[in-house]
Length: 199
Length: 320
Image (tube, rainbow over all chains, first blue to last red; front, side):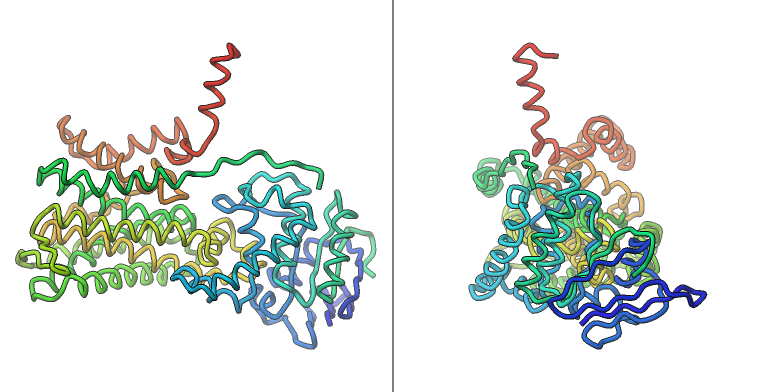
């Protein structure tokens, strides 16, 4: 499902991983942040990132999300003007984005579709312990809440593959919830940790 | 996750309803034509404020093309109404013209909008101000709109109020739609936004177009008020800079900020006129400095904050 074959400019191996649908692979890497940026398409990389056989190398970051790749850094920047719930709904599936405009104009069917999607997002948030924080502004959140919100935001897009940089604190709690979500979605999960050697 | 969230206050819709009732009924209590015309000017500034809320507030990009968009809106309106076209058609074309100004500005600044939008938009305003100054149009008689005689200043105010109220409702509801969320995310940083599947360029274009359309609507209203083109100073680059006081003073995030900022801006400029100074930039600069010193979130941020109430409680309890 997800295959990562990346090299440095000098041609040395940078990272390699293969994750099947429904499988979870943990990768120890000396530069997890840089690797995440390359997989997300926000930094130049050499090699291939394949999702269900589709090469993502030439695709912009937002295109990678549209084909089903979710990238979660374990952190959340300050997002003034937004609630935590808004952040979770950012990765709303494309098919529902037009519904947002129809709902603004009063379409009941669109509102029903959006209501169902919001219920799904809220249930993910509940499993990650975020329910008390949904109406809170997405600024200066405690680290564990920010990590949970970032993960919930990635899951809300119903990804085919999720690449997750494990946070330094509370990663086991979040991993337990992520395992349940992975079983529910059947997605591939590649989690990255800082480690001495790439596997 | 073992961390509890602080309590949140919810805004009241009753205050909004009260404001709408007051805004609709005061022209019948105050019969002065001067007051009605001032009301129309305020509505025009509110539309500019809403335009700036989207760019300066949500997209966090300093945009100075609002006077240019308003100038095109006013010019299109005056041109059409001198040729006896309908007010509705003038409105549509004025907002489209304003949106086009915004998009042209963004197209020139596309390499790095946050860096280049301020100087490019200021340059666009300067160019449009020169062009509009050459625009020679005769005054027109205000037509009717749906059997409403707009030559009556009170009627013009009420029509302007309906348009402005619709714009306020649109911007308020927009914030909870996908586009609103995406605008805020792009403003916070394109890195995070793109990881969530947001195409920053397309979102910026939509936001700038909407902002330009709102400024174009402000120009439409101003043209109706003046029955032609207003003074060239209204579209000058210095006015573009002064307009920044509206979101800064009122609050950059919300519709309430635009309403408050526009009211304070108009009030301050009128007071300055009475005091014998008509320098718009001085008035605007004074408002901005006072806000940044006293409460950087603006008046809307202060009203939404619990700090004054907590401070008062501590004072009453005898604490320091």
